[in-house]
Length: 268
Image 1 (cartoon, helix red, strand yellow):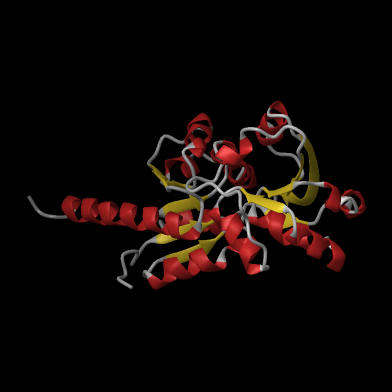
Image 2 (cartoon, helix red, strand yellow; image 1 turned 90 degrees about the vertical axis):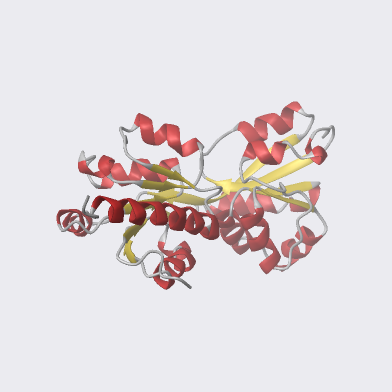
């Protein structure tokens, strides 16, 4: 692989258990990874509530997984009989990455957007338009947007949530990241969610300097969050928050960044 990121320092903010693939891509391209997770993913505070709801899994027609974490933590709550039941239900996934996680566990999904990774993309599927009489269960984290469930109910479905994980702000020490900044060893920050971006600002005590650094973001929706938070710098927007899409956007930015640096250092 060409070392398109040689000499560049990239802050990787993914949760530690999800960062390995992206870090590998960055390092193979010659980049220097600076890990700084801005979110921890943990089991639900009350797993008994989720497990109680899952005793009625066989009563649902459709089961939707909102994310790869919903797959990871949701399947861990199922017993052998429930896992077998899941095989016979219609499964949906919000995005290809979530569908791939289900596939790795032996589950085929029939409701997956061909492109995109949002609730809006899922709701555009023809099979989700007429849902009268259908019972739907959504595996998700605690809290989150209500658009998916509200829209499915408007289309005639009965919808329940099972909350199978929590998103937490970690207690990272900010000093190492500040030192990298002082040493001019921060070139771009890769971040995949609006909540993660706000966590980053909170962990660093919202300094002005962080808002001067380029941001690599995982969706167009994050642009508004970044601008509202005061970022006036370059925003590099990936097609989706998956590892390959983020890496592709990063390398494209790096090529332009390096070209600009070479031009600025060329004697006139």
